[in-house]
Amino acid sequence: MSYSVRGEELVVNEALKTRALPEGSYDYLLEFLKLYRDAVQIVVDRVWGIDEKLSWKKLHRLFYSDLMRLGFRAHHAKEIYINAKSLMNSAKNNGGRKPVLRKLSARIDKYDYKLDLDNMVLTLKLHNGYEARLRLVAPRERVEKFRGWSNYELVVKYDEGVFWVSIYFKRIVKPLEPRTVIAIDLNFDNVTLTVFTLDGKLIRLKKLNTPHRKILTHKIWVERIQRKYPKSWRFIKNVRKAIEKHGERIKNISWDYAHKLGDLVAELALRYHSVIILEDLEKLKENNKKDKEFNKRLGLWFYRRIQFCIEYEAMERNLRVAKIDPRGTSSKCPRCGGRLVEVGYRVLRCRRCGFVGDRDVTATINIYKKYISKHSRCGVSGVALNAPKPDEAPSGMQGNKDEAMTTES
Ligand SMILES: [Zn+2]
Image 1 (tube, rainbow, N blue to C red):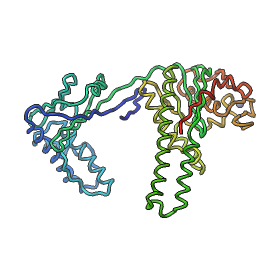
Image 2 (image 1 turned 120 degrees about the vertical axis):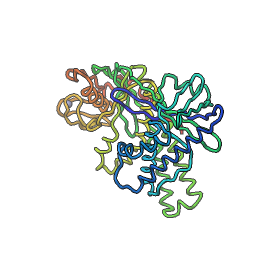
Image 3 (image 1 turned 90 degrees about the horizontal axis):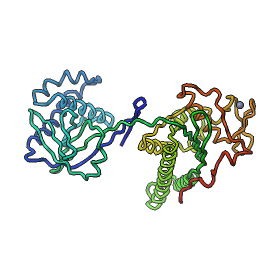
Image 4 (image 1 turned 180 degrees about the vertical axis):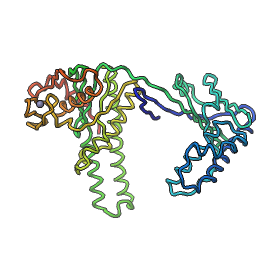
């Protein structure tokens, strides 16, 4: 499954792969698959030696009339160029031997098939005006999922006497209009979530622990073993096994946490009708390139995993996610823009205006403000920020400890 953002809309793509049984003779279908494979090979053979990049248009000019003469339909021809082009590209990226096609597989455009999901029948339009009817063999529940989705392309394969079809579906998600904003600040030890109303009131605050330290412990073990057997760890079975075991633990801990957090954030966002704001990790990476400790400290791969899960769960619930540049979110005063200095354990103070706030909560205020200043028509002027000061921290940080999420070891 994959998804992409198109303006305000989210496009979700997913394939349904199923066995297919031909109704009646499948001679024409096999003939079509062979013809299609040979046509792709012809394009590859004729174009392979040419160094220049061949545009779509050029391929069309070179091969269209030949392909028509072989009995293909217009969209078959288009799929044949696309197929040949992507095969050549990946061959060139992988060492550069000219691809030789053996498998029988064809990509077919939506104009060249008819899909009847109610009766589980697929009709393919083949060469020379032939047609093939296939009965799809898939569990009802699997197919039900795609009701209301649109499909745009499929791949038919023939492998050891069996036909397979992968049908590509897409669904356009119109996200809910947000009534509140969830700002998320990811740190080494904790994740801070704050829910703000659109006019800047903090209405919910949650701090959760991260399993970062636990992950780091496993990493340290791996490094220790590798240091002990600097050259040979790869070749001694038990040593390699020990390393793999720690790697496995890191993988489990991090995915488990990412899934739980993604679910929790999305559920909270659903309850409050929120747009979810994350830090743009690509920008974070750029901003921190010079910082040598950065990778060790932040574990960017782990944040990416967490963000992936948050985005995925949000998408499943038709919720919006936005990203902001994290520059300055933990060093600038959210009230006056002055520089913040640390005045106690995780407490920041602005020298210019006297603002005092918890470091993580302050970061989420800044994340919220960055989002609002970009997306709100009325801007942020006059926003009353009720940032919790250290002395009033308990009320500002409602139940942060007992709500803290921990992962089992
Ligand atoms: Zn200030």
